Length: 222
Image (cartoon, rainbow, N blue to C red; front, top):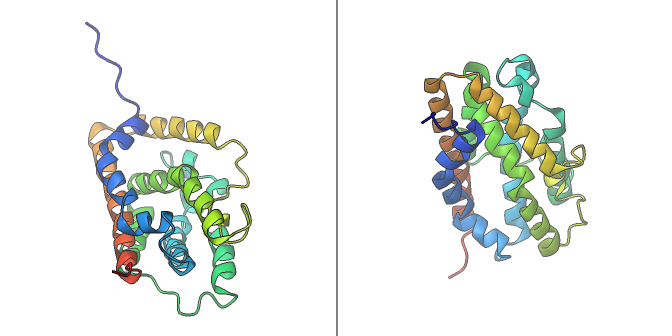
C-alpha cells in the first residue's frame, strides 16, 4: 500500500498544541471576563498586557519579511500595535502609558518573542501563528462580547485590536495563511518541525501564564 499523505504542517501545529490551547482558552480569568463577571478595568488591563506582547511580536517583523521561511507570513495587514494604542487611549485616557507595566508573565512572554525574532525565526513563526490566527478566530468572540458588555461602538474605539480593517474576507485570509504555514513546514526538516511544534505549545503556555497573572489581580468576590 502507498504511504499515507503526511499531515499538513498547520494541522500538525493545531492538533499537537490542542491541550495547551484549551488550557489557555479556558483560564479562569478569560472565563470570568467573557461571562461578564469582571469589569471594564479587567478588560483594559488585558489590553495593556497585550500591548507589551505585540510590541515584542511586531518590533522586528519588518526585518523578518525577507526571511525564506517566515517572510511569506509577514503582512502589514496583521499588525496590531497601533490599534492597541488607540484602544488604550479610549480605555485609559491620553496618558495611558503612565503606570502601565508588564506583569511578570507578560515580561517573560515578550522576552521570549524578542529572543526568537533575533535568534530563531522559525520558532518566532509558532508565535506568529498562535497570535494572529487566534485574533482572527476566537478574538472575534471577545470583540462581540466586549461591545455588548461594556457598550463599545461596534468595531470602534475600545475593540479596534480585534478589527482587521485591511482583511476583507477573514475566512479566505486564514485559508491562505495556513497554506503559507504548510509551505513553511515543507521548508524545514523533521527535527526542525518538531522544535517548532514544541514552541507552539510554549506559546499557548506563555499566553495562559499571562491570564493566570491577570486572574490574581482581578479575583472574584467570594
